[in-house]
Length: 185
Image (cartoon, rainbow, N blue to C red; front, side, top):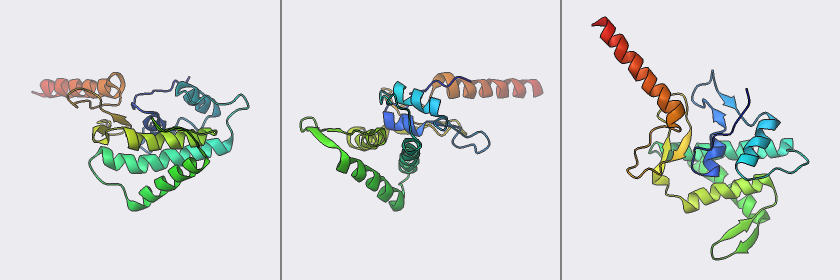
């Protein structure tokens, strides 16, 4: 099946976290970035532009570490809990490492430039925490999905990562259950 990156998180850091499909279902869980072609497609779709030399294994490993660390911190926030201090410490290390290597481009607004893809992603995770209202962070209501997104709806009522995907499945399930209940009556 041809992979097409789904950028539904509302921020590149969330779209990175969402490269694991069916995160909450171990039987169906898929790491979309494990395939180098998919990784290249995701980088291109997010504007991170991989080099023509290809994406190295070290880049993949760094992105997965960043993705899983970001998820460990963001997922509890999305459901109204607090992340562990250990996960916060790892996140701090990742961001500090990226800032040490980055160049300051502008003070107003504060803009950092990083050369490596991994450092650019780490900086984007930092920007998520710096720039976004994380009270709007949500986890998809589908029991198996686990994707995270910023709810930018006016009334804060977004429930699914994608209304066309998880939302449609939920509506179809409810319809099926109503029909089953009606048939039994």
